[in-house]
Each structure stands twice: as C-alpha cells, then as structure tokens.
Length: 423
Image 1 (cartoon, rainbow, N blue to C red):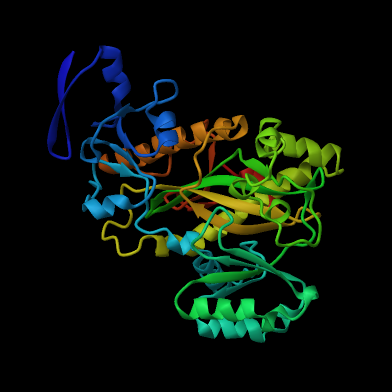
Image 2 (cartoon, rainbow, N blue to C red):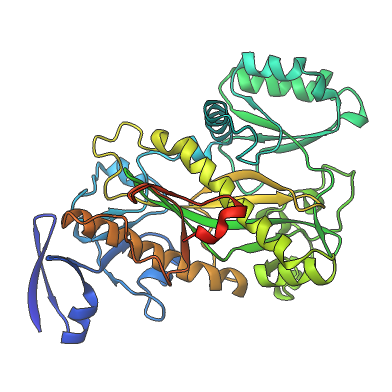
C-alpha cells in the first residue's frame, strides 16, 4: 500500500501493509499522528523501535518523527527545534532545577518554607555548597563536627565526585581536603554536603538503594506520574560503619560496584539487583516488617516525589515560550532507607541509565519507556483536539498520578491515611 503523510510540513512516502498502517497511526478525535520515531541510544532504540519489543516505526531524521527520543540535549547544537504541535520530545526545557543536587534542595527547601511542610521532601540534612558564602555557612555550623558527611558534586552521577568525611577521624573541617574543596567551590564547581545515613537498611548485610522511575508528561497543566514498579540496587561488600573510602561498601551505584573483582559473578547470581517483590519478601520474612509497612514506605517515596514535582515544576519550564508543550521527560529517583524504613530521597537523575543487561531492570524499563511514550503522545493529541487532559488512559499503563492539575479539583497523591482515594 503506497501512501503519503506529512510531518512538520515535509511529505514522506512509505510502502506498508494495511496492518502496518493501522499500527503506525494513533488517532484521538480527528487528528492523526504517525507512530514514527527518531531514537538515539542503543537500549532506547531496542525498547521503542526494535523488532522484538518496539511499538514505533523508526525514521532516520528527527524532523520526520512524531516521537523524538534523545540521550541528551545535543540537538541544540544542530539548531534543531521540535515542532511543539506535531512532535513529542523527551526533554523538558530544562532539568537542572531537579537534577542538580543543590538546586533540588534549594527549590524543595523554598517550597517547604512557603507551604509550611518542612521535611516533606524527605531529603537528608543538606547544605548546598554553591559559592563561598554557602561554604562558609556549612563550615561554621557545629553540625559539621558531628557524625559522617557525604559531599557530592551536584551535576555528576555514577558515584563520581563523591567524598565521605568522618568527624570521628579528626578535624576534617580544617584539613587540606576541605581547603581544596573551598577552592573548587570558589571557581564554580557546585557541591552538596549531606548527613550520611549511618544506620542504613541492610539486605544480607549490605547497603541498598531503591530506584523509582517517574516522569513529567505536562508542565502546564502539571501532570507528573510514577511507575508502580521499581528496583533495588545492592552493594557488593558487607556494610561497616568505617572504611568510608571504600565505594563497594558505601556507594550504591552499579558503576562503582563494577570495581569488585567478582562483579560479573555477583551480577549473574542476582546478588546486586532485586525486584521490589524480592525486597518485600526479605523485609517481611527476614526482618519482621509488616506488608503494610512495606506499602507505606513505598507510598512515602511517591509522596516525596510529589513534593519535589511541585517544588520544581515552574523552574523546569525555563524560558520556553510554549511552557513545555510537546515535551516530557523520564527521571530516576534514588532513595536510601534506614533500619527503621525511614525514607531519604538522595537525588533525582536525568536520563537514568537504560541498560537492560540484567533481567530485573529489563522487566521494569521496557514498559516504563513504551507506556511513557504512549502517554506523552496522548497528551499531545488531546491538546491538538482541544480535549481535556483530565482523563488520560493511565489505568493499566503501570503508571499512577503524582499530580494531575488538569482535573477539577486538581488531583494530588493523597496522604497515606487517605490513600484509598488514590487513582
């Protein structure tokens, strides 16, 4: 079947079967957009346009696609501007208000003060070190002389740019390493200092971290969603409250854990990555927590993300005159639990790693990407047809709302005690 369709003012010829044509077109109301995608990144391509799992047809140019999925913002260098009416693009106007660790804290702290909800974003005790003034305020605090502090570069990931300082091992606040840190801050490198969680929840004696995937599918009105299934990352060495320079004990990041000499063996045995079902079974059967406590902990994480979304949404629009129309973005959120299951949001990651070389992550990521792209397309189509965004086809997608401001009244994920009203 020969046919002709238009994307961004360009005519594109294709030969497809009738079935393929039906699969390639998505219709809401009277507007039709082809399910054609330009995808960068090997793993994203496999999940979105690959022969085995893909639900989109691949095209070779971003200008010819409905879905544009990039690993980063490099399209800016090509002076490519997405069509805000006919395309969906997996990058918000800016993400640093969320993914820069100092900016996340500053925005959340300002939101908490404005709404009188101190601590609602669940972040550990944090000092942003973004200039000499904030650095001096941290050094002058008596808290610096207590416990253990983890200092991170705000724009790094994979455990890079992290140092852990132990107040019990001498006056590190007068040490050469801190003076070097001050010089770096003075020349523009941004850091955060966070109180290190010294009583982390341990799984088989090892520190762990929970990763949830969440996304914005609209900034105006604000619609943020979270995928109901996450994963648990586990360190390769048994935890101890010392040896803080050892990333295999203290930095729960796969990039760092790959330094273990038996990483491949541990990984293949499933020792470094658990599903949430495995996690639930362990903490209920081995640690004695109730199933309700597990559910409440997971729910608390989602409430933390709701607060982070509210705190940063206006900043994420940047200077975009279209207020983020046609844009969406996937984020990863990392949580550390202490031994009482208290939740600590440690960071939000832009462009979370999409490697699918382990079965736990693969089972989560494929539907995360595919269904997110579908929801982003639905938002765009509803806008084109002047339809409300209050009734997205989220049921059965694996996602749930954190917030949907298009509803009347606006929907916000309710507190735990009111959770039965949750969508």
